[in-house]
Image (cartoon, rainbow, N blue to C red; front, side, top):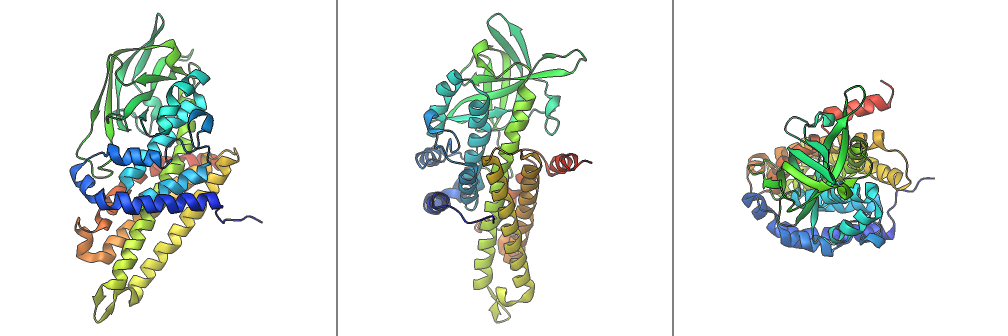
Length: 383
């Protein structure tokens, strides 16, 4: 018999992160969103709470917990503010992940301890202006030279890539061609401050306005051989495996955002009166809320199942795509209905559902669009 009950450790994480989000994030979330302001203070506090390096072993400075703990933390943050959740999600899965899973012992010891405390952040350099869903369309190149590699190219939409806390980037680059002329991809560690490497913060975003999103530029950027991550030619495999686990974080953000939007809509419907009674007493509104609650529970159940599979070391390519796809689309539906229940007030920034409605939109795009998730699922089932 399968038990879906949370263990005491997971309940403690849920309760502590929820309390932190309510007490320290909620009071400033709207202001940070308005100003498009990344908060080093909140980031350091999240580090003190143990929200970075969650699945990294204690030997490298991490928390030594499991993916279910990671998902619950991301979920609770997104329930209040997706920007802070994005910082944690991207740093754990896309920042620490490649260094821990594919780095050698020297690289792990050199970078992970400072990344697991929240003292520094790390970026994941995959997406380019001409290479989004087509990750193998990368044009950034790495040319072998004496003692290392020279990188040229650019990346964009990189979370945690340009803020003052950034310590570096894991970059995928074309490092050669195979016998058929197909590109060979290799990943490299590029530290902040490396000559020829520049980063620029992107502004004017619809969503996650208080997270750091960046453009990266590499101009004859030299990195030594010791900065190659794993084997030459293994870059694409490393990136795709990283994204499998990264989808857990995005799915968790979808569940958390949907939960936050639902709770806001329920509270409003219980208080707002029309025609002499609360909105929630009208069947049209009550049924909306019932559907919202049901879909959130289904998305959460799927998410937690994928986490347990990942923690057992099972392949999760199909299930992670399903969880990410379903949770992101549930977030979209719930946020939309939450605005509808609020009516005109749902369009005003003083109500949280306005921000939830904007923040959910990236969930169907980031770390693989909904279309790409359906492609992955269809291939996994034999189509």
